[in-house]
Length: 114
Length: 150
Image (tube, rainbow over the protein chains, first blue to last red):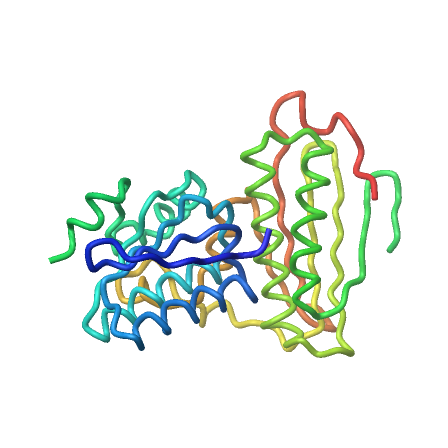
């Protein structure tokens, strides 16, 4: 299953619903383009909803890191929501769980932005 | 492609399709050998990362360079070998991705993930490139019930 993304606004926060695989190639590019587009349009409070992301490889992890740092460098914040067990485990073993702000429900994710 | 009773091997192009194909083959073969689902995922992800290394960093997508991928079932292990025809890699130049100063790097986690998911990871230069060997021990009576097939 290829990567799909769709964005929606909730109380000034952009939720990006992601599904499929974030892997080297198309999956990573789609996510990168979406985040860059959001930032270019001034949307700097971003939540990546990874509930339906069933697979991520090291390139996909790199893309999440890139999205996080790109957003931060532009004065924004990017958080992760609803990690699957596989993605959660990967963020744990790579110690990135300590870097990302990870939420497990949308309401608290939206509320957590200053 | 060549295949014997306990070994199957493939010669693949240096393309993105090869990476997906290698992952799919690993998943299918590990499943057929009876590995549990979590270990099938670990094996297929390690093979994917090895294929990424071979295609991108080894062969650099060169159309005249090939990746060979072999799966061998021994009495105690699944042994997977991935070879490229690139210039080789200097392991000493691969930074520790868990070091605080490297956590926000966008690359450099592939070999770390392979080592996390497999029991043994060996990397050695060959006359024509780099050979990466991934070994997963067979635990319990379930793995190895069926032989690898095409």
